[in-house]
Length: 312
Image (tube, rainbow, N blue to C red; front, side, top):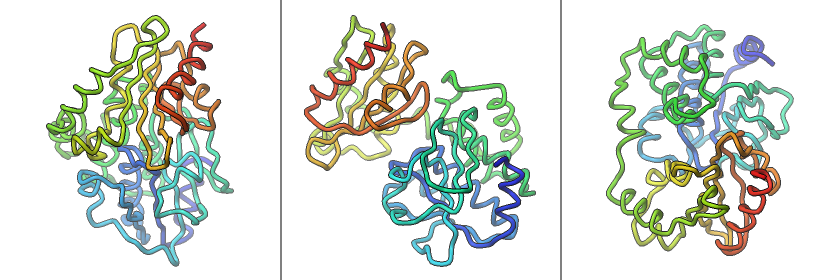
Protein backbone atom coordinates (compact mmCIF):
# COMPACT_ATOMS: atom_id res chain seq x y z
CA UNK A 1 0.00 0.00 0.00
CA UNK A 2 1.25 3.50 -0.83
CA UNK A 3 0.32 6.82 0.80
CA UNK A 4 -2.54 7.54 -1.59
CA UNK A 5 -4.18 4.16 -1.03
CA UNK A 6 -3.69 4.55 2.71
CA UNK A 7 -5.31 8.00 2.66
CA UNK A 8 -8.30 6.63 0.73
CA UNK A 9 -8.63 3.86 3.32
CA UNK A 10 -8.55 6.31 6.21
CA UNK A 11 -11.06 8.66 4.59
CA UNK A 12 -13.45 5.78 3.95
CA UNK A 13 -14.12 5.26 7.67
CA UNK A 14 -14.30 7.29 10.86
CA UNK A 15 -13.07 6.81 14.42
CA UNK A 16 -9.41 5.90 14.89
CA UNK A 17 -7.32 4.90 17.89
CA UNK A 18 -3.62 5.50 17.24
CA UNK A 19 -1.23 3.36 19.27
CA UNK A 20 2.48 3.82 19.96
CA UNK A 21 5.10 1.20 20.71
CA UNK A 22 6.35 0.16 24.12
CA UNK A 23 9.05 2.45 25.59
CA UNK A 24 7.81 5.27 23.32
CA UNK A 25 10.36 7.49 21.58
CA UNK A 26 10.09 10.70 19.60
CA UNK A 27 9.26 8.97 16.31
CA UNK A 28 6.31 6.90 17.50
CA UNK A 29 4.90 9.76 19.63
CA UNK A 30 5.55 12.50 17.07
CA UNK A 31 4.08 10.41 14.25
CA UNK A 32 1.01 9.53 16.34
CA UNK A 33 0.41 13.17 17.29
CA UNK A 34 0.80 14.40 13.71
CA UNK A 35 -1.43 11.68 12.25
CA UNK A 36 -4.11 12.27 14.89
CA UNK A 37 -4.19 16.03 14.28
CA UNK A 38 -4.16 15.47 10.51
CA UNK A 39 -7.10 13.07 10.66
CA UNK A 40 -9.04 15.58 12.74
CA UNK A 41 -8.35 18.23 10.11
CA UNK A 42 -9.71 15.80 7.52
CA UNK A 43 -12.95 15.62 9.50
CA UNK A 44 -12.34 12.27 11.16
CA UNK A 45 -12.53 11.35 14.83
CA UNK A 46 -9.09 10.35 16.03
CA UNK A 47 -7.35 9.80 19.36
CA UNK A 48 -4.02 8.56 20.68
CA UNK A 49 -4.23 5.73 23.22
CA UNK A 50 -3.15 6.74 26.70
CA UNK A 51 0.11 5.08 27.71
CA UNK A 52 1.55 5.14 31.23
CA UNK A 53 5.07 5.23 29.77
CA UNK A 54 4.62 8.63 28.09
CA UNK A 55 7.11 11.12 29.51
CA UNK A 56 6.13 14.68 30.55
CA UNK A 57 7.48 16.22 27.34
CA UNK A 58 5.68 13.59 25.25
CA UNK A 59 2.43 14.35 27.08
CA UNK A 60 2.90 18.02 26.26
CA UNK A 61 3.08 17.07 22.58
CA UNK A 62 -0.05 14.90 22.84
CA UNK A 63 -1.98 17.25 25.19
CA UNK A 64 -5.62 17.12 23.97
CA UNK A 65 -5.32 13.92 21.91
CA UNK A 66 -5.27 11.18 24.57
CA UNK A 67 -8.01 8.71 25.45
CA UNK A 68 -8.33 5.54 27.51
CA UNK A 69 -11.25 4.32 25.40
CA UNK A 70 -10.97 1.84 22.56
CA UNK A 71 -14.52 0.65 21.86
CA UNK A 72 -15.82 1.73 18.47
CA UNK A 73 -12.40 2.95 17.30
CA UNK A 74 -10.21 1.36 14.62
CA UNK A 75 -6.68 0.64 15.94
CA UNK A 76 -3.81 2.14 13.93
CA UNK A 77 -0.31 0.97 14.93
CA UNK A 78 2.33 3.65 14.31
CA UNK A 79 6.06 2.82 14.24
CA UNK A 80 5.27 -0.63 15.66
CA UNK A 81 7.33 -3.41 14.06
CA UNK A 82 5.82 -6.40 15.88
CA UNK A 83 2.67 -7.12 17.88
CA UNK A 84 4.65 -7.69 21.08
CA UNK A 85 6.10 -4.17 20.73
CA UNK A 86 2.74 -2.48 21.20
CA UNK A 87 2.29 -0.39 24.34
CA UNK A 88 0.89 -2.32 27.31
CA UNK A 89 -2.41 -0.45 27.04
CA UNK A 90 -2.83 -1.78 23.49
CA UNK A 91 -2.43 -5.45 24.33
CA UNK A 92 -5.21 -7.56 22.87
CA UNK A 93 -6.09 -5.08 20.13
CA UNK A 94 -5.72 -6.16 16.50
CA UNK A 95 -4.36 -3.61 14.08
CA UNK A 96 -6.75 -2.21 11.49
CA UNK A 97 -3.80 -0.43 9.85
CA UNK A 98 -0.02 -0.40 10.35
CA UNK A 99 2.21 2.56 9.43
CA UNK A 100 5.89 1.80 9.92
CA UNK A 101 9.43 2.04 8.53
CA UNK A 102 11.14 -1.02 10.01
CA UNK A 103 12.79 -3.45 7.59
CA UNK A 104 10.84 -6.46 8.86
CA UNK A 105 7.35 -5.60 10.07
CA UNK A 106 5.85 -8.66 11.75
CA UNK A 107 2.45 -7.30 12.77
CA UNK A 108 -0.31 -9.52 11.39
CA UNK A 109 -2.46 -7.09 9.44
CA UNK A 110 -3.80 -7.01 5.89
CA UNK A 111 -3.44 -3.23 5.67
CA UNK A 112 0.11 -1.94 5.88
CA UNK A 113 1.94 1.19 4.82
CA UNK A 114 5.54 0.11 5.43
CA UNK A 115 8.48 1.95 3.84
CA UNK A 116 11.86 0.71 5.12
CA UNK A 117 13.69 3.33 3.06
CA UNK A 118 12.19 6.08 5.20
CA UNK A 119 14.52 7.36 7.92
CA UNK A 120 11.56 7.67 10.30
CA UNK A 121 7.87 6.88 10.39
CA UNK A 122 7.44 10.64 10.59
CA UNK A 123 8.55 10.90 6.94
CA UNK A 124 5.75 8.54 5.91
CA UNK A 125 3.16 10.42 7.93
CA UNK A 126 4.32 13.71 6.36
CA UNK A 127 3.54 12.36 2.89
CA UNK A 128 0.33 10.69 4.08
CA UNK A 129 -1.05 13.96 5.45
CA UNK A 130 -0.57 15.56 2.03
CA UNK A 131 -2.68 12.77 0.49
CA UNK A 132 -5.31 13.29 3.20
CA UNK A 133 -5.51 16.95 2.26
CA UNK A 134 -4.62 17.95 5.81
CA UNK A 135 -2.82 21.29 5.81
CA UNK A 136 0.15 21.49 8.14
CA UNK A 137 0.24 23.91 11.04
CA UNK A 138 2.78 24.66 13.77
CA UNK A 139 1.60 21.83 16.04
CA UNK A 140 1.75 19.18 13.32
CA UNK A 141 5.09 20.50 12.02
CA UNK A 142 6.57 20.33 15.52
CA UNK A 143 5.38 16.74 16.00
CA UNK A 144 6.78 15.65 12.64
CA UNK A 145 10.08 17.43 13.23
CA UNK A 146 10.48 15.63 16.55
CA UNK A 147 9.67 12.31 14.86
CA UNK A 148 12.18 12.76 12.02
CA UNK A 149 14.95 14.36 14.06
CA UNK A 150 14.74 11.74 16.81
CA UNK A 151 15.23 8.74 14.52
CA UNK A 152 18.09 10.43 12.64
CA UNK A 153 19.93 11.57 15.75
CA UNK A 154 19.13 15.18 14.89
CA UNK A 155 20.22 14.46 11.29
CA UNK A 156 23.59 12.94 12.31
CA UNK A 157 22.90 9.24 11.61
CA UNK A 158 23.64 7.79 8.18
CA UNK A 159 19.96 6.93 7.61
CA UNK A 160 19.50 10.67 6.96
CA UNK A 161 18.74 11.30 3.28
CA UNK A 162 18.06 14.23 0.99
CA UNK A 163 14.35 13.42 1.44
CA UNK A 164 14.79 13.75 5.20
CA UNK A 165 16.28 17.21 4.76
CA UNK A 166 13.59 18.17 2.22
CA UNK A 167 10.87 17.28 4.72
CA UNK A 168 12.67 19.11 7.53
CA UNK A 169 12.95 22.19 5.30
CA UNK A 170 9.20 22.09 4.64
CA UNK A 171 8.49 21.78 8.37
CA UNK A 172 10.68 24.77 9.16
CA UNK A 173 8.26 26.97 7.23
CA UNK A 174 6.05 26.78 10.33
CA UNK A 175 7.07 28.68 13.44
CA UNK A 176 7.06 25.85 15.98
CA UNK A 177 10.09 27.02 17.99
CA UNK A 178 12.99 25.11 16.44
CA UNK A 179 15.61 26.25 18.95
CA UNK A 180 13.49 25.34 21.96
CA UNK A 181 12.63 21.92 20.50
CA UNK A 182 16.27 21.09 19.76
CA UNK A 183 17.35 22.21 23.22
CA UNK A 184 14.59 20.23 24.96
CA UNK A 185 15.08 17.03 22.97
CA UNK A 186 18.82 16.99 22.20
CA UNK A 187 20.69 19.22 24.65
CA UNK A 188 19.06 19.51 28.06
CA UNK A 189 19.78 16.84 30.67
CA UNK A 190 18.61 16.68 34.27
CA UNK A 191 21.18 16.53 37.08
CA UNK A 192 20.22 12.88 37.57
CA UNK A 193 20.91 12.14 33.88
CA UNK A 194 24.33 13.78 34.11
CA UNK A 195 25.20 11.73 37.20
CA UNK A 196 24.01 8.60 35.38
CA UNK A 197 26.26 9.36 32.41
CA UNK A 198 29.23 9.71 34.76
CA UNK A 199 28.58 6.36 36.41
CA UNK A 200 28.00 4.61 33.10
CA UNK A 201 31.28 5.91 31.68
CA UNK A 202 33.09 4.87 34.87
CA UNK A 203 31.76 1.33 34.41
CA UNK A 204 32.24 1.22 30.62
CA UNK A 205 33.41 -2.12 29.24
CA UNK A 206 35.59 -2.25 26.12
CA UNK A 207 35.93 -5.52 24.20
CA UNK A 208 37.29 -6.86 20.92
CA UNK A 209 40.30 -4.57 20.88
CA UNK A 210 38.17 -1.58 21.89
CA UNK A 211 35.87 -2.04 18.89
CA UNK A 212 32.89 -2.94 21.09
CA UNK A 213 31.73 -0.88 24.07
CA UNK A 214 29.04 -1.83 26.58
CA UNK A 215 27.22 -0.05 29.40
CA UNK A 216 24.70 -1.41 31.87
CA UNK A 217 21.80 0.46 33.46
CA UNK A 218 20.73 -1.62 36.44
CA UNK A 219 17.51 -1.13 38.35
CA UNK A 220 19.58 -0.37 41.44
CA UNK A 221 21.36 2.43 39.60
CA UNK A 222 18.09 3.88 38.34
CA UNK A 223 16.58 3.80 41.80
CA UNK A 224 19.62 5.28 43.54
CA UNK A 225 19.91 8.21 41.12
CA UNK A 226 16.18 8.75 40.64
CA UNK A 227 16.35 8.14 36.89
CA UNK A 228 13.21 8.63 34.77
CA UNK A 229 12.45 7.38 31.26
CA UNK A 230 13.24 10.86 29.94
CA UNK A 231 16.72 10.57 31.46
CA UNK A 232 17.32 7.31 29.57
CA UNK A 233 16.26 8.46 26.10
CA UNK A 234 19.76 9.24 24.72
CA UNK A 235 21.75 6.74 26.79
CA UNK A 236 21.97 4.15 23.99
CA UNK A 237 24.09 6.45 21.83
CA UNK A 238 26.73 6.88 24.55
CA UNK A 239 28.97 3.81 23.98
CA UNK A 240 28.94 4.22 20.19
CA UNK A 241 30.22 7.80 20.55
CA UNK A 242 33.69 6.57 21.62
CA UNK A 243 36.37 6.82 18.92
CA UNK A 244 37.14 3.45 17.32
CA UNK A 245 34.01 1.72 18.63
CA UNK A 246 32.08 -0.09 15.88
CA UNK A 247 29.27 -1.41 18.09
CA UNK A 248 27.78 0.07 21.25
CA UNK A 249 25.76 -2.16 23.57
CA UNK A 250 23.39 -0.73 26.16
CA UNK A 251 21.66 -3.00 28.67
CA UNK A 252 18.66 -1.80 30.67
CA UNK A 253 17.51 -4.12 33.43
CA UNK A 254 13.86 -5.18 33.23
CA UNK A 255 11.48 -5.96 36.12
CA UNK A 256 11.54 -9.62 35.02
CA UNK A 257 14.26 -11.50 36.97
CA UNK A 258 17.41 -11.67 34.85
CA UNK A 259 15.80 -9.73 31.99
CA UNK A 260 17.65 -7.08 29.98
CA UNK A 261 16.44 -4.78 27.22
CA UNK A 262 19.29 -4.57 24.71
CA UNK A 263 19.90 -1.54 22.50
CA UNK A 264 22.59 -1.95 19.85
CA UNK A 265 24.05 0.97 17.88
CA UNK A 266 26.61 0.24 15.17
CA UNK A 267 28.77 1.63 12.39
CA UNK A 268 28.63 0.40 8.79
CA UNK A 269 30.89 -2.50 9.82
CA UNK A 270 28.03 -4.27 11.63
CA UNK A 271 24.35 -4.68 10.78
CA UNK A 272 22.61 -4.14 14.11
CA UNK A 273 19.34 -5.66 12.89
CA UNK A 274 21.09 -8.87 11.81
CA UNK A 275 22.76 -9.26 15.19
CA UNK A 276 19.57 -8.64 17.17
CA UNK A 277 17.59 -10.95 14.88
CA UNK A 278 19.79 -13.79 16.15
CA UNK A 279 18.15 -13.27 19.53
CA UNK A 280 14.56 -12.72 18.39
CA UNK A 281 14.82 -8.95 18.04
CA UNK A 282 15.15 -6.56 15.15
CA UNK A 283 15.22 -2.95 14.05
CA UNK A 284 17.39 -1.04 11.64
CA UNK A 285 20.86 -1.55 10.18
CA UNK A 286 22.46 0.92 12.61
CA UNK A 287 20.04 0.71 15.54
CA UNK A 288 18.26 -2.39 16.77
CA UNK A 289 17.20 -4.15 19.93
CA UNK A 290 16.21 -7.39 21.60
CA UNK A 291 15.52 -8.87 25.03
CA UNK A 292 17.90 -11.33 26.70
CA UNK A 293 18.03 -13.10 30.04
CA UNK A 294 20.97 -13.91 32.31
CA UNK A 295 23.59 -11.97 34.19
CA UNK A 296 24.81 -8.71 32.66
CA UNK A 297 28.23 -10.26 32.07
CA UNK A 298 26.75 -13.28 30.31
CA UNK A 299 24.50 -11.15 28.08
CA UNK A 300 27.33 -8.81 27.10
CA UNK A 301 29.58 -11.80 26.33
CA UNK A 302 26.88 -13.38 24.15
CA UNK A 303 26.32 -10.19 22.20
CA UNK A 304 30.02 -9.43 21.84
CA UNK A 305 30.68 -12.88 20.37
CA UNK A 306 27.92 -12.40 17.80
CA UNK A 307 29.21 -8.92 16.92
CA UNK A 308 32.83 -10.10 16.62
CA UNK A 309 31.73 -12.71 14.08
CA UNK A 310 30.27 -9.90 11.96
CA UNK A 311 33.36 -7.73 12.42
CA UNK A 312 35.65 -10.51 11.19
